Image (tube, rainbow over all chains, first blue to last red; front, side, top):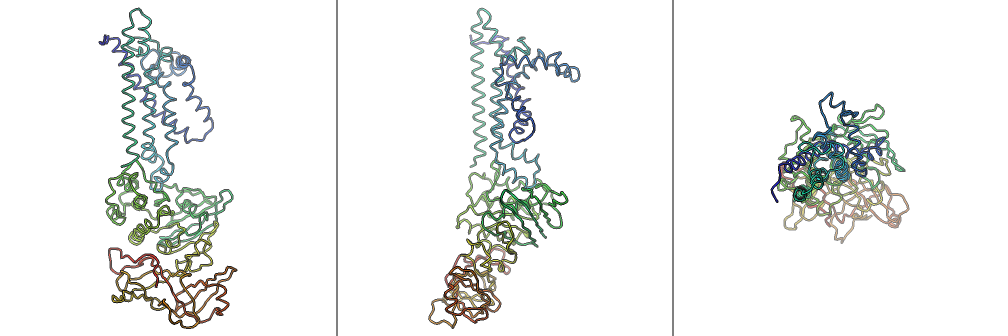
Length: 231
Length: 377
């Protein structure tokens, strides 16, 4: 009962890879957008805000379908990326990662944005008077101060990625070994007779991974907070 | 070193139109809250863009709105100690101190780390984080951090206003050492007359966004009628004196100033040391004939130079005592009853003096400490 089949192992490993890449790739963009939304005053800010938070309220299937239209083989960007850089998303694990990243993006941005808004800008001004230009101020003062927010956002996005189903299955389908992640594999088990044991095993694994991520984040977060609060 | 500042700036209903020059030393921007002191310092630092301004440090133009010159704050090479410590919470004290050095070339790192740590007495704190420090400790680290950035000008905006009097007395000697040993010119914002009398070489008096008076610390602070109302109570003359001798039997010290000998309870300064003595107007009485049978022992002949005007019951009378200015606060009634008017020879009776600091220490490396505070004489 507790031994995993090769298909299950593949699905779990793929899920972890997809979630990890989704978070890593969206972090820099997410931080940049969060800072922009927290600090910037520019034309079209509300539109950008809406676009970023859209996947949170849109049916995931719609998001997946939009991704298919844009990044599919014949999609606007998909064709261009495939021809010039050889990057293909359609029906590849990279596409699953893209779908996960898009779905987790609003959660990441929200958490980082809140921590950017909480940064005492007087500290940044002080760093400026000490000779640090804007880039250095961001790297040496802002970034360390928002680290707990980045961590929280990354964990949320990671968890969201692990659970991503609708957008993934719509965009890159459910191909074992390539795009079959933990949730889609679980779904497949529930669709075939005698798949109950497999579904249960994958559910337990999902619970374990999520718990582990949460605990790790909590421990790391406390350590970061202790650094800021002194002693 | 020279600093040239001219600012015209408007924020809502408040308008600032101020300018001054400094040739080094400690320039105190003195005035009541809301007089625009902080704005002046922020314009010098580049944290506020003034409507019209020109700021020049050592011939280097930092701001000139007429020529659209605005050097960004991080290229100004100034140090800024804020009202709040603003230490970086994620760095240790040592890392905080060294932060500004990062952005200086090795040739620009003129301030030795050990000297700063020693002068400010922060060696035991180096490995701690800011959150665990007391208010006074934090501000000392903030001063060290600004100093170690090797600034050509140090700006301090009421850095100790949040500390209680005891903590403040503890920290001011460090600032005196900073002023004397770093040779970095300082612009120091304050609304505390004792602090200004103790630290300043030059005073710029700001009121309602205008410079109402500029001059040496004795000049400005002795024009008691020109001072902001809330500072008048403690206002008085500042007299430079020299320790002439100690009488160990009577436990007295004699100071020599131009006005004459001043006797007071023994202080711990060597003979020959120079002391800055503040004599508050409310601690000086006027007698028209040599007084007898008084408990106060410091009586100095003087000539009335000016009788304050106005309609308040108390009047400040300026006296000239052999070249030293003294100020006495007496009632308008007494002025009339005793016939006090300019040119009249009188006797100034000094009830108490305030010792602010030793201004020069003959050959001493450690700071000699005067007995701070007000002493009855």
